[in-house]
Structure formats: structure tokens, C-alpha cells
Length: 242
Image 1 (tube, helix red, strand yellow):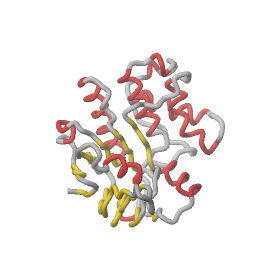
Image 2 (spheres, rainbow, N blue to C red):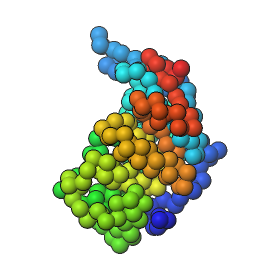
Image 3 (tube, rainbow, N blue to C red):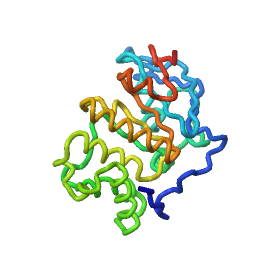
Image 4 (cartoon, rainbow, N blue to C red):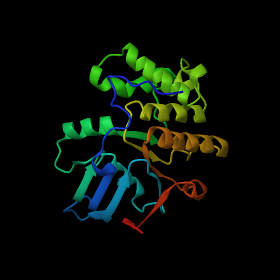
């Protein structure tokens, strides 16, 4: 089902300078700087993703994959280096500016869906759109309904999220992540808690939105079979891109 665009959400096919959605140059991340516990986790990461990239991030536990994802998602700041999101250099932005940039350009799907179980599936998808308007309206509901339909959950849109299966909840989480038409979708082990059938279904949805909406997808996975189906695979080992 085609997704309805609204004035409350950015238009699909947005113009991004040079088509580069994410660019990291010399990015380092140090925790507990200046203390006896100082640890550098990322050691000068260079990485660029363009529109429609579909990229897996792999590597052993503790290699820095989630730290890298958090920095790209503007949930954490690099200790050194530069990060551009949709052409905007982010390292000098204030927290409020980072929140704006993240809200309009980045969607998140985590291993745990983090839905509000007391809300319906539809209400969960509407939540990102409430950030600016502050109250729900008909356009938001139309957009959320289209997204729920697109992930195959139309008949369950009014079910409480807590009453859905794990695979259904992750589908709602994907719909929610796409509510603002983000340029990039970040996913941290989105299939890690699912059986193989549900995992394959969730992967297929990510690929569908990548192809149909032009959304750049970057996801962390330990599933080599899924990674082989991606356009690109980044290996992170000991805080560096191998």
C-alpha cells in the first residue's frame, strides 16, 4: 500500500547533498577520558553511506558495533573526528539541534521493540509524529494506518501492543521507525529475539522499505546468512573497520 505523505512529516525522496546520508571521518570514541579507566572503543572510523545503501555491520562482541551505531544515530557524541548526517556536520551542534536532526532523519529499530504495551499498535506508530505537533490529528492517523498496513498488520492496528506476538511487535517497531520518513534506518540486532521465520519476515520488510522508499539501512547483526543478502557488509574488529 502506498504511504500517504502529510505536511507533518518530511517528503519522501528528499534532496541530500551528494546523496551521502552518513559520513564519518576519523571518528574516535573514548569512555571515561582522563581517568584510570579511560578506554578508547573506536579508533578512527572512516565510513560513508549513500541513499539506498543496505548495509550490515558485523563483528565480535565488544568490537564497537553498538557504539558506532549510537554515534551515527546521534545518541552519543564522538570524542574526535567528524560526523555528517544528510550533509549537516553534527559535532558542534547543541543537544536541541541534534534532537531535531535525529527526529527528522533517523529511525531506530532495536533488538527489544520498546513499544508502549498499554497503547495500541496504531498509537505506537503515531508517537514520533507527536513530537512537533504535540497532539494527534487526522493526517497522523492516516499516515500511521498506511504504515501499519504496509507491514501487514492492518487487522491488528487497534490491538494493544502487549497482546501481539514478538514478530508482530517488531513489525510495529519498524512502522514506528518509519513514521517520519527518515533518510536512514538504524537497527541493532532487529532479528536477534525472533525465530527464523519471523527474522526472515522482518529482514524482508527492511529490504522492502529500502527499495521502495529509498531509505538507507544500517543494521548490526550476528546472522551471517542475513548479512550475505545485504548490498554491503562492514566488519568492525577492535574498534576499526576491517
